[in-house]
Image (cartoon, rainbow, N blue to C red; front, side, top):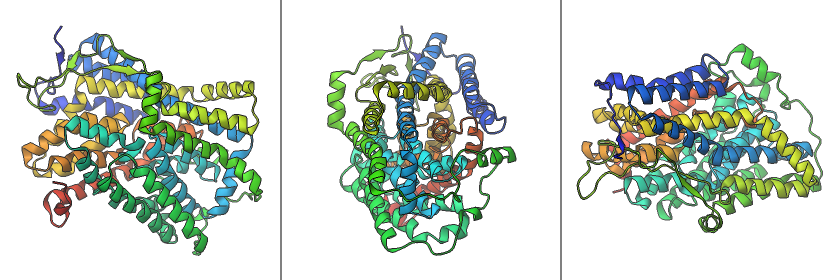
Length: 571
């Protein structure tokens, strides 16, 4: 049976087709942010609309559409849900033993000022987890730590999302860049270098931006040495490693440099502007009074609560679980380790009714020729349970549990309780990924992309926003690169712009969409035990996401046309 060809203008009018293609996104975001429907119900509603659009407007075969939703849901549960479940399990173990409070005390002692804590934890520490694992791990870890340090749930969730932007393109040991080079056919080192000539500018900006989002302009000025130190010590290694080594270790090296530099700075400098957290201005755009009350009544520790300085032995015990996590997540991400674990057990299934059953068409892919026909879209589910990052986290949690004195039965009971606590988050992530996969295999995502691509000389700007849209839709810079990478190359070549520049722009613009994708928001709400307030988190971060994406778009536009910026483009 011949594969079903995608049609990007099924209604005969590009504008009408684009409006219909946008319906699932509009319904999903509207239900979360404005109608304040519970997010797992909003996700299921968005999925229903996506299926209706795919079946009725884009004429996708029903069996393929249902298989697509099933594949997306499976991918949502594994590996993404698997990461969240096991990370919350480790967190719960440390809470039950009282060691998370000790960790909070040690961090507060190292950096008493919450603005510096934000830079150190949300930006520098989070970047390490992004580089080692990605897939929501950094937001889950940093949001939980920030809330225990006294940040309100909305602040902890939203600020962790804003901070987890500039490192995303090189997350999970460079996976998004590797995928981008593969789908575009461009040289891997050229793509890595070009992204490394865009994102360092924003790596320098983000520490200032995230503190401004929390403390306002005056509050940010009071800790500018910490922001500058964190940003420069991350941006410089990010540029050097991405340009002269490759995409694999960019975030790991840059994050360790940033952490070390900030800690060294704190040995000789502390803020002296007299700022207190009670002076935090209201930058929570669109947050209702009821939401503000809900977060203020949460069980997060308050800034005014006195923390007894813990003894050194207890501090070491409190850090062991998180050091175990860091080491094992890093080992699990090393390519050689992944290959060995995959060789032991990595079953792969071709999805019936979907594998090789759909095919993308021009101009999303190059015009087929007899020598180079267009390949149908593969649809396989890889259950690489041994090499999955979530398995490394589970091993770390079990080892940490035994170290903390839990018995095997106690670990089982805590795990069962954790699974119950995150059940709605898992349902939400499954529905979100199902929605994303339906848009991919039906071609509605490409319809939206083509609309942005037809912007003439402004294409460098809007092409960057296409990357932002891709991550907002799929929740992954890797998925966005796979989705729109080929389209970016084709359109760039047609308009006389460097394809390397626009492929890189897809990834660099995409990182700013990471904070508004539903998957990341669910991870943040779960980590802060604030499930049900995802609409507030979305409203909190939306302005920051769009503003930063716009700045990336302007920067790419300058690189396309204006000296000396255009001299930065990799040839």
